Image 1: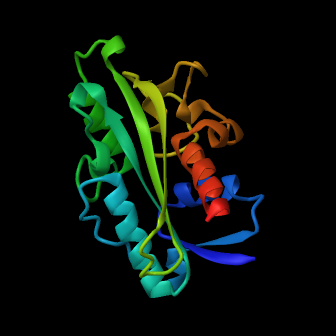
Image 2 (image 1 turned 120 degrees about the vertical axis):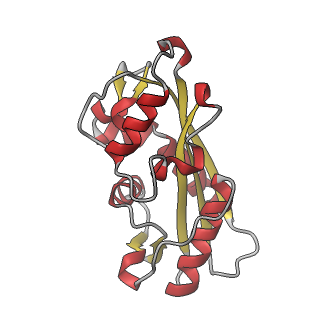
Amino acid sequence: MSKIVLASSNQGKLREIQQVLAHLDMQLVPQSEFDVSDADETGLSFVENAIIKARHAAAISGLPALADDSGLEVDALQGRPGIYSSRFAGDKATDGDNIQKLLTELEGVESQHRSARFQCVLVFMRHAEDPSPVIAQGSWEGFILEEQRGHNGFGYDPVFYIPEHQRTSAELDAEIKNQHSHRARALEKLVDLMGRS
């Protein structure tokens, strides 16, 4: 079984990725097990930040690394919060703080103009100097509600409404979410690409 370090301290992401990859012959280990601190996300895109995180984790752990950079793009906010999704309301912001800031900024915006999508970019690096990392991207379309619904998931899940399921992401069972989410779609592409490389 190959061991891969996950370049994240986010327990929600770790859980989701482990569930989706459970059928593969790989052991996903959180970077905290190697005392890897969070990398400084100085990139200007999801791709840049995912590469920075994967390279950082691979360099310190000495293992292949998988990194995820994801976030929410809201059309009425010209794509914000985007790469700043986890710190939209400030560096120490909680999920609740970020949701509140998002809802405040969208006050007065009619429901049909509250379209949004979750984006996820995954990067797999065989080692820290890997010149050709495997990169996969997935997105999930929806709308931002005016109030929170559901208790599953994390981040913006309670306000992200998916019309095809008529529920928020936080109201979906983990099994359904892990089949349809932006992260699930990116993982499916990544596994396919890794199988070819």
